[in-house]
Length: 165
Ligand code: 16G
Image 1 (spheres, rainbow, N blue to C red):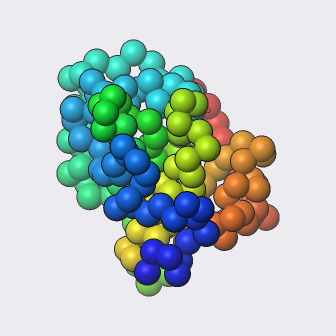
Image 2 (tube, rainbow, N blue to C red):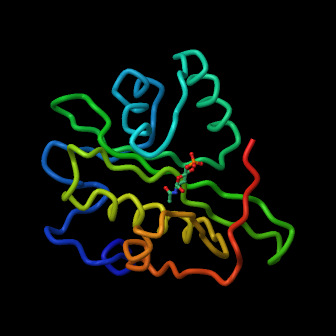
């Protein structure tokens, strides 16, 4: 399934073999102390989140069953070096189907060039297919459009709108 459904990798890494000294796995609460927020801060403002706030949010997300937060850990340094999230949103439309959303795709600047972004997005896209989402979407900076096109994502003719508070 993996090699058939993803963009080509060279060298041929996969979720179970993400590269020397690296492991790809779901987020766990101990990752708070392994630099998870340091990685996220390379994407946007994270705010000062305490361990308690993190754990509470983690448990909530886990309970819903709709959050798939994955991380890549450098096993020697015991540090998170990349992360991405898949969220499934429940719908009445499309025969009570689900929509997948890819969020917070970040690869630490110290770990660029190892195909980790490609690995994370391929993994989440494949999971969304397995979970029978009828579509999967994401928002990204214009400079990252070409990257996501490699996985079959295409610009939509719908406008992206937001209201920020
Ligand atoms: C990017 C992210 C999105 C994240 C947002 C944060 C991807 C594919 N997209 O659009 O998930 O929520 O940045 O920016 O990773 P903000 O702080 O301006 O909302």
